[in-house]
Length: 236
Image (cartoon, rainbow, N blue to C red; front, side, top):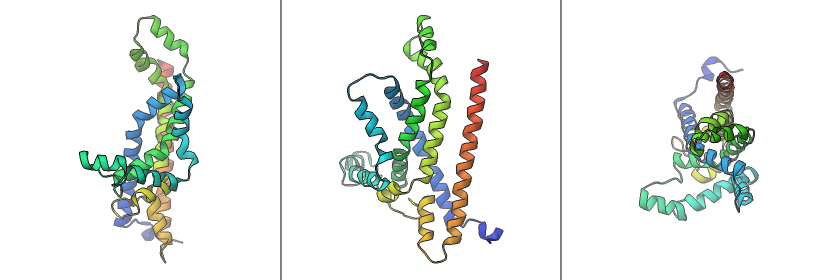
């Protein structure tokens, strides 16, 4: 049985926790606008290639995470077509950087985010949008004042799913950005490192408790926000 002193995180473990929160937060916020647009296209759009877009979006759910990470390394590595362009023209390097970890986490969590938002859009009553349109509202105004507020529960659910996936992402991240302490070593990578060294069980257990706590807090926060937003929509 561990004592309270043994449950205290070390400075290096705190670094991994903060880095995980940073990576997950950046991954969620950066992919949110794209998630809204893609979910709208998949839910409402009628265009050639829609099925192909749907397959591409959900492909990270089917592929092994290591494969996704390797594909990111090929595309966004220093010698990859996208990575070389970013490094040469914009000075942005993603491979073996925490920003690359955020990219990998965003890619892995994006299908879950899009799916939650798409289901929310499909449940929006089109008659409400049509009514606003007959009153002279432009399509953009209808989306801003009618569709988007009704989408909010789905957006919150998608963000929480994306954030949770980013916190727990391991395979794609370690393949694309490796496991560098202080730079790319997130919670899952740190736990994995502890399990590979003698006497690392205590550190792995501490970080596991932290990961569970973060997941529980995220779920509680999403539930509270969804209820508050639901009450406001009922009042309006």
